Length: 307
Ligand code: HSE
Image 1 (cartoon, rainbow, N blue to C red):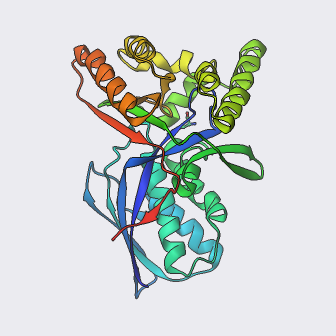
Image 2: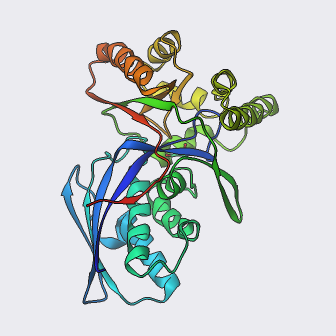
């Protein structure tokens, strides 16, 4: 095999109470990549769709991730990475993670899978780090592995796939504003009051217990963010209006997707997600800012080969 075409899912990270440690993969939204093994020893990046991204492999998250993997393997093979970028950069639903994870997953397949999916993580994170200026895996891990993922620890990286009720679905509003993750992280600072930390880890434990036992009420009351949302929500016009609408319409919870500007409503069932999505769209429209609405189930599989 010297060519592979893959779907790289968009991801929602943080999920309110899990800053930097929780993420999930979406089923219907994502980039496509075609990766070809070439006769030379260079990496080349091409783009066929979407907003312009850097094509210099040294400045492109796919290129940096691929180089990290190839150097680790001592490989001198060359690859051409063609990206149909459907997840807009700076949207908060894992655009850079899809490119970073897709590059390493695809190249690993073309080399006969010398590394496991988990072993690919640090290489995908190396690329992700140039986009966000931070070492976080809560988008690349669910993109690579699928489903709902917990980053139990970073040193060393320890990633756990969580059980979750299969009826969960999300409505996502992506306002067409760009928020840079690196800048959005500076808003949070590096200290949180103890009472906020206690509330946050209580909710994180509650959410994971609720996911495992299929207790939707427990999931719902755990989806509260005492760390990032209070500092970041002001960057998203109409945030409070959308949150009120989501909760009164029966969503289990509502919050910022990653560092924003996308917001998510977690719902029980895709029909409910579509209904809540419409309410969110109506609540956001008065802001006069273009937006996309996505409704999707959680995808258990992560990156996958497509015809
Ligand atoms: N956990 C990261 C953050 C995700 O919130 O900064 C960025 O997509």
